Length: 520
Image (cartoon, rainbow, N blue to C red; front, side, top):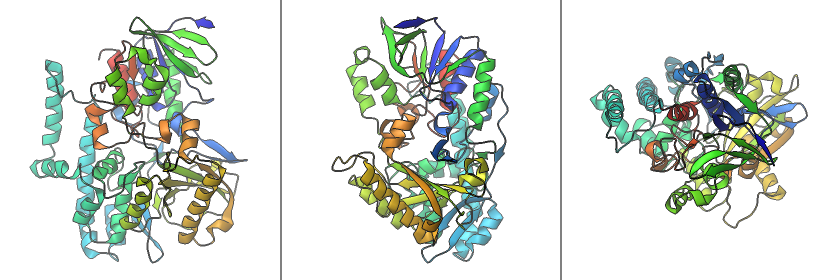
């Protein structure tokens, strides 16, 4: 066993949150080490080669939201981004497509053949969505509210949040409280009459949830993933022009400029604790690295149940962490194609579920631990965004698949046969909407929830680090009583997507956790 010179802080994970946290601590004069088990930085933005010459970044549906405060905190300018022309495209039950442009005027024109009433209402609906999302953006820029606040500083923060809420105006204040806990089905039934429009909007409410559109709280899930989205969008956010890992590369350079050391292929296997306080980490090569602070961006279960000896944690706290709902249910099929499918809006998000009834039926299977048949499939053509992912003249298509539960009803493993059946089902679902699609497939690879767990280190293959249900957000994320980034062991902090504000907010949790370390 070797021992390394100590640091002021060790950050576990070289994704956006870890790099932002490290850069923030480094700019404050701390000696920081970042360790990551992968051979490259980027975390969930990493691209994977799935066939010779073909790569895809399956978890990079979009860039996410980079709050301006995060970029300023680490002294960088945001990478160049592209906003897709279409906010979403949905397959129609009788064939063809409904493509909704980001422009409210053009979207209304696209909606008129389906419903004059819905076309007239579209501008008002998207304006309300933008106002609600803007409130969440304000909420996500600060530590979660402390409901037991007693100090002047905490009370002041709560008052500031209350002012932002009041700024919505009386009608929208009431409307926000009404819609946040609603199901997508109930909300879109209130707002629209066209089945296709309901499907186009409603599919966003179940993203990476083991829930269907009739489940409560799915409106919140939709709004969460619209933070940072352009006006008029109900699904798609921007993507980085220079590649899915563009922000991670910028953040890594900022961290290095601040004196941070980044070590790849270095897996933390134990967080060292001495006398109820963090002492450092043990790496997989038996090297001990010492520091009084460890900030982990792995998910709560991996950090608190996998890296920490349970003797240092209260049994009730361990029980709460074990009860976090991960419930990975998303799989991916990566396609290398000879020909790009003729679908509008492929540089954004294309949903193949023509109705919310169809989507709910797909969820019905997952309730019983079964893979949906047919599944809910959403497509993005990543080679349209980043041509270098495929050989010249070829293409890469990523299919997001729900529902493919991590745990099956009968305990069946994700073996080769089960994985192949999923691939055939997804290919057929696409071919039903795009004739001759199968003839263009050169390569395909499935990433099951089990593969996602192995490749990216996400418990149960849950890309959320814990589902975004109403009982797992704000001061209940990751668990009640441990929501302010500091864990029950002195010097241990959680700064990944399993902490507030959750996934899809680039560097948000990392910055807030680093500020907590610095006492800001």
